[in-house]
Length: 290
Image (tube, rainbow, N blue to C red):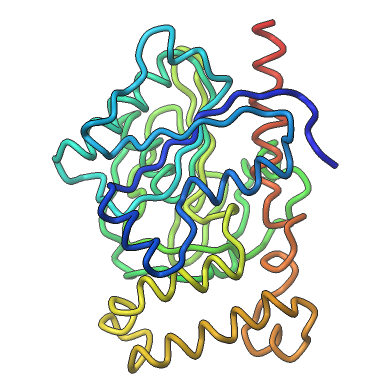
């Protein structure tokens, strides 16, 4: 099934240029490309622009330009949202402007932190350390079980993830939709007084096994230094197994060894949040505006 409505979306890539180059050298698709891969497949009639918001020489949209898009998507980022530097503060200002304009937003990882901070919440370094590769046993809250973001999603699932920070205080107008033992705020819905809404996840529905494997290659040094692997060669061997499962998703031995089920392997469950955001927030608002 595909979405046949011609949506016009802006994907906001939160990575600075130098860090995008690091990802490229490791063979990782850029954060915006991960969303584009989904959107071009699922919304073939859509138009999609990319904004490299962390590049200080890139002009930000303002005024009526903000409402020229049906919605915005925030990618992940390797920046730290509580650091006072222009690459960060200009993103916060842009998000606030989009909220005030009443245009729907979605984001993963950096996106959930952005949604919280802009509305007065707080983000800190996660005291449990890095959550990497797969966030285990994410559970929907009572609010999450009835929220349209999770239509068709199991009450408990796993998701791709890579982060050091967490939302430590939920903002006014914010509702926690999912949680696990490592990170209490795994997803969040935030409503602005203007009517603007931001649905966001700490985990990454836009990733797949291959892309996460490549991201582990890009992060093999910190993963080793932080004690998740004894040496970088162990990261490479783990990457080989993830890649093998990507190539042979029905291999029962690999799935058992890696503890990976259909919520990770299959796009139907893994990408549910992205489809639901379009169907239950973006499209209704487009129809209302028309």
